[in-house]
Length: 129
Image (cartoon, rainbow, N blue to C red):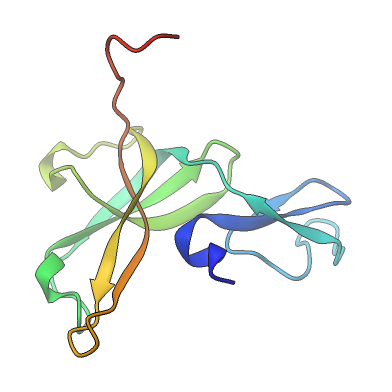
C-alpha cells in the first residue's frame, strides 16, 4: 500500500489492456476484474490548469497552489499539483515530468509526507545519449 503514496501506481486490465489511475477494481472498458498493478509513466502533457489561492488546513505554507490536468504518456489523465513554474508561464501543451516532493508535514509529530507533483520537463544539455 505504501507504494501508492510514493509513486504513480495505477493498474492495467490484463484482458483488454486499458490502464487506470487511480486504480479500479473493475475495468470500465470490458468489465473484467482481472486488473494488475502498473506503474504509470512519469511524463505527460499539461491539458488545463488552475490556481488555488486558499488551501486546506496544513497547506497554508504552499499558497497559492497550482493544479493541472495532465495527460500521461499512456493517455491516462490525472490531476496533480504543479511546481517549479510560475502561473504566468504555464501553457497548455507544456511537457511535464513527475517529481518527488514534500506534500506536507505534521507539526505535532514532525512527520513529513512525500509524494509526486509535476514540474516542467527540462532537457539536460551535454548528457550522453
